[in-house]
Image (spheres, rainbow, N blue to C red):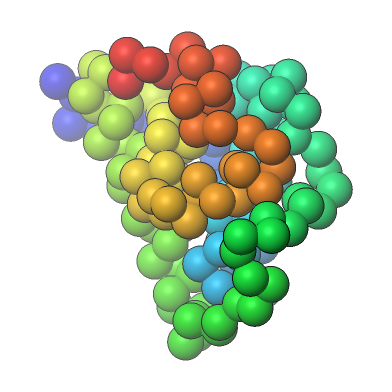
Amino acid sequence: MRATVALAPDVAIVLGIASTAMPFVRTPEDEAERWLRVLRLSGDVGAALQALGVSEGRPFQDPEEGGDRVDTSASGAATHDAVEQVTEQAARIARERDSAEIGTTDVLMAVMCVYGAEFDRVLRAHGVDRDDLIEQVGAGSL
C-alpha cells in the first residue's frame, strides 16, 4: 500500500475551488451543495453527474424537508477543516485502491463519507440517488 498519494490535476482544481467557495457557506447542507457543484465540473464524476442530469441551477426544494436552514458554522476554520477532512478521506480511499493519485471518484466517495445523509439530501434535491451516482461512476467496488 502506498504511503502518500498525489492529487490528479482535476482534483487539485476541485480542492482549490472548494477552498475558495467554502468560506461563503452558512450550513453543512450548503457545504455539501458546494461540493456537488464543484464536482459537477470535473473528471469522471463531473461527466457522471451531468449524465444523470445535475445542472448548475438551484435544486428543487423537497417538500418533506423544511426550507429553514440553521447556521451551524462558527468561522472559516470549520470550512478549512471540511476541505482537509475530504482531502484526507480521499487520500485514504486512494491508498486503499493502491493508487498513485487521488481522482475525482475518490473525492466524491470522501464527500459521501464526510457529509453522509446531508450529501444524500443534496443529491436528491438535484434528482439523483446515491446508488445511481455510484453506479454511473463505476465506484461500486470502492
